[in-house]
Every structure is written in C-alpha cells, then in structure tokens.
Image: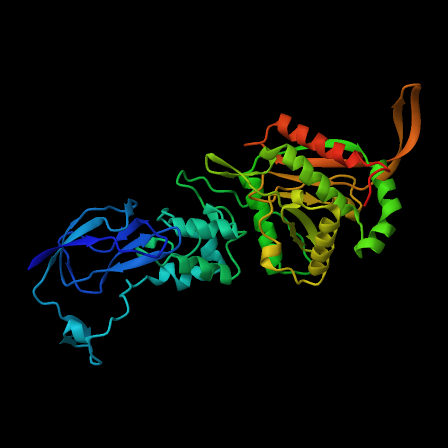
Length: 438
C-alpha cells in the first residue's frame, strides 16, 4: 500500500481555484477508482471529482466551503494493492477487470429522494417547500444574476445535489419549466413568520397566462425594486428651441442622410453628453464595490408589437455624431417592431431612457434597469403659457415644455448628484439654436 496526495485537479483553462462544495465520503471510508468523492464549484461550472485509485481516504485537508487553489493537496489516500476496477455484469454480480483494459465509466451519482425531485415540481411544492441547504455556489450565483433570480426564488427550486445543494442542471431545468415559483408566496423564515394569506378577491374573468417575456419583465422589475432604493427627481425643460430646430431640419436631414430625424436621437445625444459630465451616474454596484463603466451605452426602452418592452442599446453613444446615432436608433426601432433584435443589440446598456411621452404621459417614475443605477423618463412635449424673463421685463409666451424625471439608486447616487445630472440633461435639451448645422 502507498500513500497518495490527492490534489485539486484543473477544471478548465482559465480556472485557478475552486470552492469545496461537499465531501461525499468521510475519513476512513473505503473508496473505489472513479468513484465520485467530492463536489467542487468554480465561477464557471460545478464539478464532481472522482478518486484516482482504489483505497482508503485517510485524511481530508480542505473542508466544505473552503476556497482552494488548483494543485493544492485536499486529501490523502492510502492506495490499495488491488487497483482493478469493479463493475457489475447483467445479473448484478460484480466482476473484475484490470484498470488498464477498461474504459472509464460514467461517474456514480448518489440517488436523490423523490421528495426533492419529481414531487417538488408542482406549483404547491414550489410554494411551500424550501431547500434546507442554503449554500449557493459561485456558478449558481452567476446563473441567478443572469436570469434575475432572487435567493428567495432559488430556495424553492428542487435540488438534486448532495445534501440538498442546488446544481446547475437544477436551475436550468427550472428556467425551462417557465419558473413556476417566480410569483409564489414568500417562504416562511426560521423565526416562524409567514406572510398571511389575505384571501384577496382577485375577481373573475378571462385567464391570460403571461408569456415568457412578460414573466421575465415582471421578475426584473421586482428584482430592481428589491435591490435598489429608488428615489425620483423631476425638472421641467423648455424644449421650444429643440422643437423648432428639429422642425426646420428634419426634411433636409432625411434628404441628406436618408434617415428620419425623430426626437429620440436628440435625446440620446444630449443624455450621453450629460453622462460624460457626471461619470458616477454611469456605474453599477457589485457588493461593496462601485464599477465605473468605461463606455457610455444608452438603452432605449422600446415597446414591442406584443406590448412587452425591450431595451435596444446605442453603444458608445458619446463618441458618435447625430447622423450615426439617428441611423442606429432607426435601425434598432425597426428591428424591435419586427422582433429581429439580436442579443448583442439589447445588452450592455449603462444608462436607459424611457420615453413615456410617446404614450401621452405627462411624466413617469421608471424602474431602474438593473444593473444600472439610474433611468431617465421623458414626458410628453406640451405647449403652455410660460413666464419668460427678459431684460426689459417679463413676458408670457407659448412654449413647448417637457417634464423629465430621473429614478436613481440611492445606495450610490445621492440627491446632489441625481439632481445635478438631471438639470444638466435639461440644459442640453434646451440648448438648441438655429446656428447648429446638420
């Protein structure tokens, strides 16, 4: 017999460390070659690690939840003299073959009780059951962030891992099933508190099931309100000069560039300038860290034919002229209307504009598009009588006015920053004169 140092194997080209999820065997247990003896998590994948030899697990050097570098000794195994691989024949009897002459067999998986698999797939199980094992691996956390799944929702997903731990396949299976626990009532906490069932009268009528996109939007909105303490600031902007400039130049613009000149490119251009002036608006929050984004990518909340919303993105908007921005805005809007937007065209936004004025709204209080920290709503452009100050006195004039509202994440954006940024946006909206050329 010989003692073997069992080291954490490499899990991939870019993986340098892993987290021990759980040991499936104990010190002193007899183990077989290719038997799964522990589970390891990385930020990319959860893996089952097999024993390289037949023998006895003498000692465990890295415990559950411990972060270990690849190549670090995590256990010692006393290898047995007999290194043959034991398999079962068709009759169930064990037969022996030499390890050198056998093909690697599939890793053994511990059986899972039906109470945590098939029986947990019903809506009632999702609502009432809660995984007792609260450990969430880095991989599961990354998947949850991508799909905007809260910890409360993760707690309802049937887990097939050892000791009730969630596996990647569990989460993907749950997502494919349409996330039946997404709107389930809160799981009771350890204190015994439970959200009361108020038996609210929800009325009677036609039942319309949410489509997949509507479910994702609903979850994203709830996630955002749960994550960010929302504060909303308002200003009123005088868009008379912008309106007059656009009316005077929209036909020459289209004749020259072949692109329609709507208000959206003008808004995107002005907002990109303001974001550049106030870079702390162009951030996201990662735990206790603030990530200042290198690029200014402006998202445009756009309605689809189905009524759902999507956010196509103008990348690096601060580096583009009005002609280029208008071309991208028009192309993205056309693709949105025809449901032809690609994933890369709806990802990576760092700040979002929601034009609620399109639907006739005077103003709005938009919900932040996570992981951003602020969102601007532009209201309807409405003519009104305004008092204008001149050197020779005040005059009442008909002006084109708009309310702007900024919802911001009060964790990292305070009132001064939010108010100053919003005022700067309004200034850029107002700063249009006849001397500007196309």
